[in-house]
Amino acid sequence: MQSNNNTIHLKTPSRSERFVPTCPICGNKHWPKDPSCLGKKGAKAKAKAKVAAKGKTIAERLGPVNTNTYEAPRVEAKPVSQPFPPQVTNYTPTPAPTQSTIQHGGEQVINIKAESEKQALSFVQEVERIKKQADQVVAAASADAARQIEAERQARQIAEEDAKEQTQARIKAEQKLKQSLLELENLKHEARIADQLYNLKME
Image (cartoon, rainbow, N blue to C red; front, side):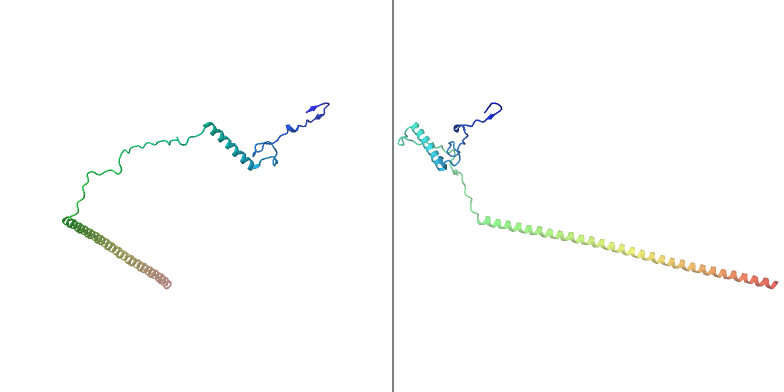
């Protein structure tokens, strides 16, 4: 860019200085969809050719391999520390049960069964005894409660009857008192009338 007399001149870049992207497929610099690009198939073939050339170079460096003189690595077998399965030296077979042994075992089973039945019967009897005793206690408590309730009922009935009799006696006494007062008032009235009549006669 140059400036003369306040004039700006832009320098146009040449064809070789222009930006050209790198193709991710072939690795060359060109614009997308350029006919010169190898494409995906061409890039794949190119990569295979590079790998083959690299393998050929490595083979040439190593030299030829003689398959006749090749020996496989030897593997040494380690001895087993303990044989398997272990050998049994002292083995005494179990003798077969005799008739007496079987009979003795049967008697033991019968005795154990009889003892179990005896213990079960004793347990049932003890449970029945406890249940009977509990029933007796409940019955006694119920009888005591019933007697107490009956005594309270009778006492309440007697108290109510006494109160009723006292109320009736008080009513009768009040009635007698009123009757006596009324009779007294009548006597006083008659006495006043008799005095008045006597005074009139004396005049």
